[in-house]
Image (cartoon, rainbow, N blue to C red; front, top):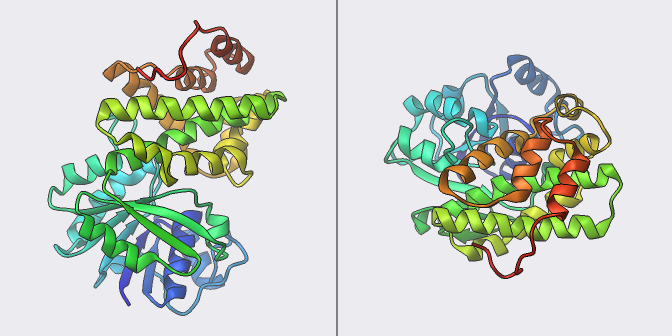
Length: 333
């Protein structure tokens, strides 16, 4: 059994902390919000983000990054993507040389347009980095409902190590060596989920959603190919798998946010009503800028970016996408 420090006590970080502690690992979890920490210590559950699931004795709620990482074998980062840099910087003094860093944030950093692994390697070039992603709603993982994810690293031995630590009879873990593809898939699918929600909110049917998802995966592959990802990754758990679950479930914050936008709610108000971080709202801007930078055509991403920034309406976006020039489906360039 291992000692694992969890940085960030949102729904996903908490679900993983519960899974790992129930397996027998010693888990210490912290958060930047001290009121939230005190609530979890008092109630022995995450009342705010994952209510109704009690913590076992192996899960300890601590008040600082230093406490969480003291003696840890693994540092699990579950801060939102736009806060990953600051969380990682704060943790660096406490990251021992043999400590493995597992990141579960999904997104592209605004401004720098960097993936989380790129930030980690920039700040700590010798970091033992692994990304974990896949179709995995926290609400289901926390309740031990069957879930399958993938872990990726430059070093397959690290990926296999994390696979062994995390895998249970209800949480199956595959390995992958394509860090770029896994991180892009897990980030870009949130944009398509916003679009799927907007389509639902307008009142369109399954045909429209299927088209958005299918053409959305094409956009993901197109950008991934340009940035050096393996196209096969987008056909797997962190591509199509994550896209399906995020575009079709009401557990998905991105889809719920999109539904409200499609119904006419202003994007900023929709985010507020969701009540948690809607990563797709940030990633849409970063992905749009990244596509422009590297010269990749991403019409769905561009329309959603313009829609959530109120440059066009949701119905305008539909007309723009449906009225594009004729294309051959198999051409991705």
